[in-house]
Length: 257
Picture (tube, rainbow, N blue to C red):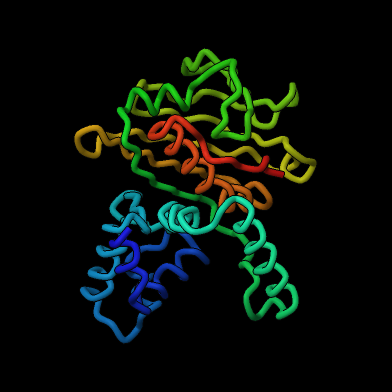
């Protein structure tokens, strides 16, 4: 937590985070343009601090490193001081201010990023994380109480339903227990997302020290309302998974809509 406060205390690092919020997947060269008065070395040093605080996740695409905002540590800070009910009230007031001040002031940017990446560290084994992600046939409290059904074999299918209604389904593209699970991601929870093209959900489960697992969640090829829901809900979802594995209790979450 101290590393997060240190990282966001610097205005240049906050500008980098703002830039990645507006457009994920930027290269070092693109981020240097955000801080034109700073050397490439200086920008790299700031990014290293943000990575050390887990606020930025780096994905290598060919020979280029792409940087993504990882809001999970910020969501965990919010949960420390805001209860479930005060958080909802604060979000509602922020939305009201954005509406009253107009789009040029504080409204959220239009989501155009084709890929979203989140990283979270969980004090549990890789197998425990895999088992939680692939739990089948019973309601999962960390994921709005939905039930997932699959045999998790590559080439097969999976579905995630709520009270018998299929919210998400797709193909099992890769299944490498307990390190990698790649799924098609076709959302159906309302008419808007049902009309959007399917994306790809990629879980990477890696050791990150004794008794600690790093879970990286990548959602690619999503657009519109599906992408907006991913940005909004993913930090809370996987923070809830972390809580379940570390304490035995998931966070209370409202069903996504």
